[in-house]
Length: 417
Ligand SMILES: Cc1cc2nc3c(=O)[nH]c(=O)nc-3n(C[C@H](O)[C@H](O)[C@H](O)COP(=O)(O)OP(=O)(O)OC[C@H]3O[C@@H](n4cnc5c(N)ncnc54)[C@H](O)[C@@H]3O)c2cc1C
Image (cartoon, rainbow, N blue to C red):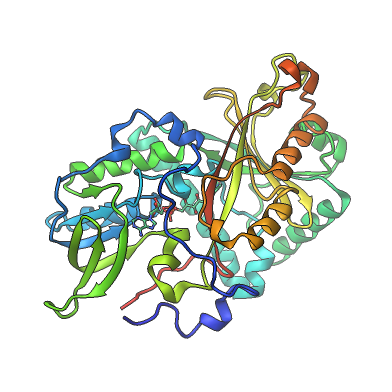
């Protein structure tokens, strides 16, 4: 098998990452995300289309997250007469897609400087355009198909919280403007008093607001997979692919090995995200699985500021790369989801460095520094009065982890052979 990304391996590998971080999806003992909990009674989670694995298929997709589900969808729509098998190691869509923070937030300015440094001005501008087009197509698709996935469309607000973060944001925004970036749809508020009023975040220094969405990612992916099944796609959950080897019988074909049998196919798509380096060793050192924790909080009813005031989605920029992503599910059921690289993440990352075998452990919940940071933020910045919780309890009612695929460059689509 030809190695993936062989030529670029040195340039693109993660600095200081020796390739010791990889693993297959954890079997048993995963945490329960909010989205998977909502889907707990859904038969799709453990769907097996045929009791036996097919011996052969035109396409085998490994992974049933958003990527694998969409690949199967495009393929079956283009070639309805062909056969497709989707293998999923655990329950349907139980990886990052079923565990994320629910934001569909096109990057419209913040990543520009970094993209420009890596890929040049015109590519960086194209990336921002592509982010907007992708978001816009997604919203159209959900609305046209009337998909039940709690879609919210409104303004997301990025909120720098320190003078330094506000200066950095302002410099980056002005830089994008001078390079001809589209910024008319981004509403900027530089006055801190007004920013705090708009965002309902006490120490807000500025606001950058532009159109974005939140949704239930499991429901959206499930809708697409159900469409796939109706078109003849064969979904096999709880069936990890353990290896892929060239076929001895048919030159140019592959054999995907599982404990339930083998499938031969001329095309195999790895849609395995953070786990890709376990199945494809040449990716070790390039794709690093890293657990991230999300917290779900319920504001106190008596609180002066509660969810009704959090009418947007937020990126709270704390400086030094730390940020909270906030997804208030105001219209859906009133809880608030916290994700992102909060100030407690640093300590968590340090712990993970000492525990590399936990890099694919999505059973991790409630790491103390992360929980503490969210709790402090709700008290000091949102005004959630802790004394309003029974017995001094925390507003955090649920915590889960998902595994992010860290890489030193943008996501890539590559041919393995
Ligand atoms: C905590 C967290 C918060 C996030 N928040 C956001 C957010 O708010 N907004 C956003 O846009 N993005 C967010 N992301 C990122 C986003 O969720 C991912 O980029 C996206 O879901 C990736 O989709 P995917 O289908 O490629 O991978 P996944 O959803 O991870 O799917 C990969 C699938 O492959 C399966 N698999 C792996 N190995 C095998 C094998 N050997 N055999 C069979 N099956 C296998 C896995 O079980 C899994 O189901 C977040 C991620 C995490 C972890």
